Amino acid sequence: MRTTTLGSKGPEVGVIGLGCMGMTHAYDMAVPRDDATSISVIHQALDLGMTLIDTADVYGPFTNEELVGRALAGHRERAVLATKVGLLSAGTAGLVRDGSPEHVRTSIDESLRRLGTDHVDLYQLHRVDTAVPIEETWGAMAEVVAAGKARQIGLSEVNVDEIKRAQAVHPVASVQSELSVWTRDVLPDVLPYCVEQGIAFLPFSPLGRGFLAGRFASFDDLPQDDFRRALPRFQQDALRANLEIVATVRAIAGRIGATPAQVALAWVLAQGNQVIPIPGTKTPKYLADNAGAAAVTLGEPELAELNALPAPEGGRY
Image: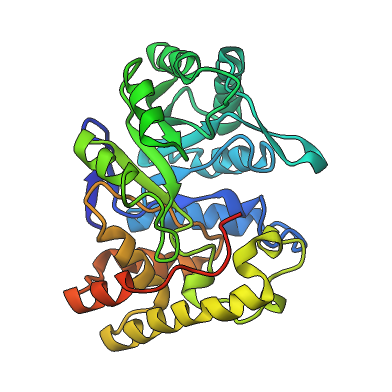
Protein backbone atom coordinates (compact mmCIF):
# COMPACT_ATOMS: atom_id res chain seq x y z
CA MET A 1 0.00 0.00 0.00
CA ARG A 2 1.20 3.51 -0.75
CA THR A 3 2.09 5.55 2.30
CA THR A 4 1.91 9.05 3.73
CA THR A 5 3.04 10.63 6.99
CA LEU A 6 0.98 11.09 10.14
CA GLY A 7 1.24 14.87 10.19
CA SER A 8 4.17 16.90 8.96
CA LYS A 9 6.60 15.34 11.45
CA GLY A 10 4.99 11.98 12.11
CA PRO A 11 5.80 8.41 11.18
CA GLU A 12 5.07 6.83 7.82
CA VAL A 13 1.72 5.05 7.65
CA GLY A 14 -0.41 3.40 5.02
CA VAL A 15 -2.90 5.77 3.42
CA ILE A 16 -5.72 3.67 4.90
CA GLY A 17 -5.71 2.60 8.55
CA LEU A 18 -7.87 0.34 10.67
CA GLY A 19 -10.48 1.43 13.19
CA CYS A 20 -10.93 -1.29 15.81
CA MET A 21 -14.00 -0.03 17.71
CA GLY A 22 -16.49 -2.45 16.19
CA MET A 23 -14.48 -5.48 17.28
CA THR A 24 -15.79 -5.12 20.84
CA HIS A 25 -18.15 -2.14 20.89
CA ALA A 26 -21.35 -0.67 19.42
CA TYR A 27 -21.92 -2.93 16.38
CA ASP A 28 -23.53 -6.39 16.29
CA MET A 29 -23.54 -6.61 20.07
CA ALA A 30 -26.03 -9.51 20.07
CA VAL A 31 -23.43 -11.64 18.26
CA PRO A 32 -20.75 -13.25 20.48
CA ARG A 33 -17.35 -11.66 20.09
CA ASP A 34 -14.86 -13.51 17.92
CA ASP A 35 -11.56 -12.27 19.29
CA ALA A 36 -9.51 -14.77 17.32
CA THR A 37 -10.87 -13.45 14.02
CA SER A 38 -10.48 -9.84 15.16
CA ILE A 39 -6.85 -10.46 16.07
CA SER A 40 -6.25 -12.09 12.69
CA VAL A 41 -7.83 -9.05 11.00
CA ILE A 42 -5.38 -6.76 12.82
CA HIS A 43 -2.49 -8.95 11.70
CA GLN A 44 -3.83 -8.97 8.14
CA ALA A 45 -4.13 -5.19 8.22
CA LEU A 46 -0.45 -4.90 9.10
CA ASP A 47 0.43 -7.32 6.30
CA LEU A 48 -1.57 -5.18 3.86
CA GLY A 49 0.22 -2.00 4.94
CA MET A 50 -2.68 -0.59 6.98
CA THR A 51 -0.29 0.28 9.77
CA LEU A 52 -2.31 2.91 11.66
CA ILE A 53 -4.28 0.96 14.28
CA ASP A 54 -6.88 3.07 16.11
CA THR A 55 -8.64 2.27 19.39
CA ALA A 56 -9.87 4.08 22.53
CA ASP A 57 -10.23 3.38 26.23
CA VAL A 58 -14.00 3.94 26.12
CA TYR A 59 -14.58 1.21 23.52
CA GLY A 60 -15.96 -1.62 25.58
CA PRO A 61 -15.05 0.14 27.83
CA PHE A 62 -11.45 -1.06 28.00
CA THR A 63 -11.99 -4.34 26.12
CA ASN A 64 -10.92 -2.87 22.79
CA GLU A 65 -7.54 -1.75 24.06
CA GLU A 66 -7.07 -5.16 25.68
CA LEU A 67 -7.86 -6.90 22.39
CA VAL A 68 -5.54 -4.64 20.40
CA GLY A 69 -2.83 -5.21 22.99
CA ARG A 70 -3.09 -8.98 22.55
CA ALA A 71 -3.06 -8.61 18.77
CA LEU A 72 0.06 -6.46 18.78
CA ALA A 73 2.05 -8.69 21.14
CA GLY A 74 5.09 -9.55 19.08
CA HIS A 75 4.03 -7.11 16.34
CA ARG A 76 4.23 -3.75 18.13
CA GLU A 77 7.04 -2.39 15.97
CA ARG A 78 4.95 -2.93 12.82
CA ALA A 79 2.08 -0.74 13.99
CA VAL A 80 1.51 2.98 14.44
CA LEU A 81 -0.71 2.72 17.50
CA ALA A 82 -3.34 5.32 18.33
CA THR A 83 -5.71 5.47 21.28
CA LYS A 84 -7.94 8.09 22.89
CA VAL A 85 -8.88 9.58 26.24
CA GLY A 86 -11.62 11.90 27.44
CA LEU A 87 -14.84 9.91 27.15
CA LEU A 88 -16.26 7.75 29.92
CA SER A 89 -19.07 5.24 29.82
CA ALA A 90 -21.88 6.20 32.17
CA GLY A 91 -23.98 3.09 31.62
CA THR A 92 -27.56 3.84 30.66
CA ALA A 93 -26.74 7.57 30.79
CA GLY A 94 -24.49 7.15 27.77
CA LEU A 95 -21.11 8.84 27.55
CA VAL A 96 -19.69 11.70 29.62
CA ARG A 97 -16.63 13.82 28.96
CA ASP A 98 -13.67 14.15 31.30
CA GLY A 99 -10.85 16.38 30.14
CA SER A 100 -9.38 16.98 33.56
CA PRO A 101 -5.58 16.85 33.70
CA GLU A 102 -5.83 14.26 36.47
CA HIS A 103 -7.88 11.97 34.25
CA VAL A 104 -5.42 12.32 31.36
CA ARG A 105 -2.44 11.52 33.61
CA THR A 106 -3.98 8.38 35.08
CA SER A 107 -5.65 7.17 31.90
CA ILE A 108 -2.48 6.99 29.81
CA ASP A 109 -0.88 4.57 32.26
CA GLU A 110 -3.99 2.39 32.27
CA SER A 111 -4.13 2.42 28.46
CA LEU A 112 -0.47 1.47 28.18
CA ARG A 113 -1.03 -1.43 30.56
CA ARG A 114 -3.98 -2.73 28.54
CA LEU A 115 -2.14 -2.24 25.26
CA GLY A 116 0.98 -4.00 26.55
CA THR A 117 3.36 -1.25 25.47
CA ASP A 118 5.43 1.55 26.98
CA HIS A 119 4.15 4.21 24.57
CA VAL A 120 1.52 4.96 21.97
CA ASP A 121 2.37 6.70 18.74
CA LEU A 122 -0.70 8.94 18.88
CA TYR A 123 -2.70 9.90 21.97
CA GLN A 124 -5.96 11.65 21.09
CA LEU A 125 -8.46 13.72 23.05
CA HIS A 126 -11.69 11.92 22.19
CA ARG A 127 -13.93 14.93 22.85
CA VAL A 128 -13.30 18.37 24.28
CA ASP A 129 -14.70 18.71 27.80
CA THR A 130 -16.50 22.06 27.86
CA ALA A 131 -16.15 22.18 31.65
CA VAL A 132 -12.35 22.20 31.38
CA PRO A 133 -10.39 24.78 29.34
CA ILE A 134 -8.83 22.93 26.43
CA GLU A 135 -5.50 24.52 27.31
CA GLU A 136 -5.50 22.59 30.61
CA THR A 137 -6.39 19.28 29.00
CA TRP A 138 -3.88 19.76 26.21
CA GLY A 139 -1.19 20.75 28.68
CA ALA A 140 -1.65 17.43 30.45
CA MET A 141 -1.47 15.59 27.14
CA ALA A 142 1.75 17.48 26.34
CA GLU A 143 3.10 16.12 29.64
CA VAL A 144 2.36 12.62 28.34
CA VAL A 145 4.60 13.36 25.34
CA ALA A 146 7.33 14.82 27.55
CA ALA A 147 7.23 11.65 29.66
CA GLY A 148 7.78 9.51 26.56
CA LYS A 149 4.41 7.79 26.90
CA ALA A 150 3.11 9.18 23.59
CA ARG A 151 5.02 10.24 20.48
CA GLN A 152 2.36 12.71 19.29
CA ILE A 153 -1.04 14.00 20.40
CA GLY A 154 -4.21 14.65 18.43
CA LEU A 155 -7.77 15.92 18.72
CA SER A 156 -11.15 14.52 17.75
CA GLU A 157 -14.38 16.24 16.67
CA VAL A 158 -13.11 19.80 17.13
CA ASN A 159 -13.55 23.15 15.40
CA VAL A 160 -10.79 25.40 14.11
CA ASP A 161 -10.79 27.63 17.18
CA GLU A 162 -10.23 24.63 19.44
CA ILE A 163 -7.36 23.45 17.24
CA LYS A 164 -5.74 26.88 17.43
CA ARG A 165 -6.08 27.04 21.20
CA ALA A 166 -4.45 23.63 21.53
CA GLN A 167 -1.67 24.57 19.11
CA ALA A 168 -0.75 27.50 21.32
CA VAL A 169 0.16 24.95 24.02
CA HIS A 170 1.67 22.06 22.03
CA PRO A 171 1.71 20.95 18.35
CA VAL A 172 -1.41 19.15 17.12
CA ALA A 173 -0.39 16.11 15.07
CA SER A 174 -3.84 14.99 13.95
CA VAL A 175 -7.55 15.69 13.95
CA GLN A 176 -10.03 12.83 13.83
CA SER A 177 -13.60 13.52 12.71
CA GLU A 178 -16.28 11.91 10.61
CA LEU A 179 -15.91 12.37 6.85
CA SER A 180 -17.58 10.47 4.06
CA VAL A 181 -19.64 10.92 0.93
CA TRP A 182 -22.65 11.59 3.16
CA THR A 183 -20.91 13.50 5.98
CA ARG A 184 -19.00 16.57 4.77
CA ASP A 185 -19.19 18.98 7.71
CA VAL A 186 -15.40 19.41 7.95
CA LEU A 187 -14.82 20.35 4.31
CA PRO A 188 -15.44 24.12 4.55
CA ASP A 189 -13.06 24.92 7.41
CA VAL A 190 -11.55 22.14 9.57
CA LEU A 191 -9.97 20.11 6.78
CA PRO A 192 -8.52 23.14 4.92
CA TYR A 193 -7.00 24.37 8.19
CA CYS A 194 -5.44 20.96 8.81
CA VAL A 195 -3.98 20.96 5.30
CA GLU A 196 -2.59 24.47 5.82
CA GLN A 197 -1.00 23.51 9.14
CA GLY A 198 0.37 20.11 8.16
CA ILE A 199 -2.01 18.31 10.52
CA ALA A 200 -3.08 14.77 9.59
CA PHE A 201 -6.83 14.32 9.20
CA LEU A 202 -8.21 10.92 10.22
CA PRO A 203 -11.76 10.31 9.00
CA PHE A 204 -13.76 7.83 11.03
CA SER A 205 -16.85 6.17 9.55
CA PRO A 206 -15.65 6.85 5.98
CA LEU A 207 -18.11 4.20 4.79
CA GLY A 208 -21.06 5.81 6.55
CA ARG A 209 -21.05 3.08 9.22
CA GLY A 210 -21.29 0.47 6.47
CA PHE A 211 -24.20 2.11 4.67
CA LEU A 212 -22.19 3.43 1.71
CA ALA A 213 -20.83 -0.07 1.08
CA GLY A 214 -24.41 -1.13 0.28
CA ARG A 215 -24.77 -3.45 3.25
CA PHE A 216 -28.20 -2.26 4.40
CA ALA A 217 -31.34 -2.00 2.30
CA SER A 218 -33.77 -1.49 5.19
CA PHE A 219 -33.87 -0.87 8.92
CA ASP A 220 -34.52 -4.59 9.46
CA ASP A 221 -31.11 -5.40 7.96
CA LEU A 222 -29.41 -3.79 10.97
CA PRO A 223 -28.28 -6.34 13.57
CA GLN A 224 -30.09 -6.43 16.89
CA ASP A 225 -28.45 -4.47 19.74
CA ASP A 226 -26.62 -2.35 17.15
CA PHE A 227 -26.36 1.34 17.98
CA ARG A 228 -27.09 2.32 14.36
CA ARG A 229 -30.73 1.42 15.11
CA ALA A 230 -30.90 4.64 17.16
CA LEU A 231 -29.29 6.92 14.55
CA PRO A 232 -31.56 9.23 12.52
CA ARG A 233 -30.09 8.34 9.12
CA PHE A 234 -30.87 4.67 9.63
CA GLN A 235 -34.53 5.09 10.51
CA GLN A 236 -36.81 3.48 7.95
CA ASP A 237 -37.97 6.54 5.97
CA ALA A 238 -34.57 8.25 6.07
CA LEU A 239 -32.76 5.06 5.14
CA ARG A 240 -35.07 4.52 2.18
CA ALA A 241 -34.34 8.04 0.90
CA ASN A 242 -30.62 7.65 1.49
CA LEU A 243 -30.49 4.56 -0.69
CA GLU A 244 -30.32 6.97 -3.65
CA ILE A 245 -26.85 7.98 -2.45
CA VAL A 246 -25.79 4.33 -2.35
CA ALA A 247 -27.22 3.78 -5.82
CA THR A 248 -24.89 6.44 -7.22
CA VAL A 249 -21.88 4.98 -5.42
CA ARG A 250 -22.79 1.51 -6.70
CA ALA A 251 -23.24 2.75 -10.27
CA ILE A 252 -19.82 4.39 -10.28
CA ALA A 253 -18.29 1.23 -8.82
CA GLY A 254 -19.76 -0.79 -11.67
CA ARG A 255 -18.35 1.58 -14.28
CA ILE A 256 -14.79 1.60 -12.97
CA GLY A 257 -14.55 -2.03 -11.86
CA ALA A 258 -14.41 -1.39 -8.11
CA THR A 259 -16.66 -2.12 -5.14
CA PRO A 260 -18.95 0.49 -3.56
CA ALA A 261 -16.76 0.53 -0.46
CA GLN A 262 -13.70 1.23 -2.57
CA VAL A 263 -15.43 4.10 -4.37
CA ALA A 264 -16.53 5.64 -1.07
CA LEU A 265 -13.02 5.36 0.36
CA ALA A 266 -11.40 6.64 -2.83
CA TRP A 267 -13.56 9.78 -2.56
CA VAL A 268 -12.29 10.33 0.99
CA LEU A 269 -8.68 9.79 -0.09
CA ALA A 270 -9.18 12.31 -2.89
CA GLN A 271 -9.76 15.05 -0.31
CA GLY A 272 -6.01 15.42 0.30
CA ASN A 273 -2.70 13.69 0.91
CA GLN A 274 -3.00 14.29 4.64
CA VAL A 275 -6.33 12.46 4.81
CA ILE A 276 -5.94 8.95 6.28
CA PRO A 277 -9.30 7.19 6.63
CA ILE A 278 -9.67 4.54 9.32
CA PRO A 279 -12.58 2.32 8.26
CA GLY A 280 -13.51 -0.23 10.85
CA THR A 281 -14.15 -3.91 10.24
CA LYS A 282 -13.80 -7.25 11.97
CA THR A 283 -14.15 -9.27 8.77
CA PRO A 284 -11.17 -10.36 6.62
CA LYS A 285 -13.17 -9.98 3.40
CA TYR A 286 -14.16 -6.40 4.12
CA LEU A 287 -10.63 -5.56 5.27
CA ALA A 288 -9.16 -6.68 1.94
CA ASP A 289 -11.88 -4.75 0.12
CA ASN A 290 -11.04 -1.59 2.07
CA ALA A 291 -7.32 -1.97 1.46
CA GLY A 292 -7.96 -2.21 -2.27
CA ALA A 293 -9.33 1.33 -2.26
CA ALA A 294 -5.76 2.65 -2.05
CA ALA A 295 -5.29 1.55 -5.67
CA VAL A 296 -8.54 3.11 -6.94
CA THR A 297 -8.37 6.50 -8.60
CA LEU A 298 -11.55 8.41 -9.32
CA GLY A 299 -11.60 10.58 -12.44
CA GLU A 300 -13.01 14.08 -12.57
CA PRO A 301 -16.43 12.89 -13.81
CA GLU A 302 -16.77 10.43 -10.91
CA LEU A 303 -15.63 12.99 -8.35
CA ALA A 304 -18.05 15.56 -9.75
CA GLU A 305 -20.90 13.08 -9.58
CA LEU A 306 -20.14 12.20 -5.98
CA ASN A 307 -19.65 15.83 -5.02
CA ALA A 308 -23.08 16.64 -6.44
CA LEU A 309 -24.89 14.12 -4.29
CA PRO A 310 -27.58 15.59 -2.04
CA ALA A 311 -27.23 15.77 1.71
CA PRO A 312 -28.56 12.68 3.47
CA GLU A 313 -31.86 12.52 5.28
CA GLY A 314 -31.33 12.62 9.05
CA GLY A 315 -28.57 13.85 11.31
CA ARG A 316 -25.47 11.95 12.33
CA TYR A 317 -26.68 11.35 15.90
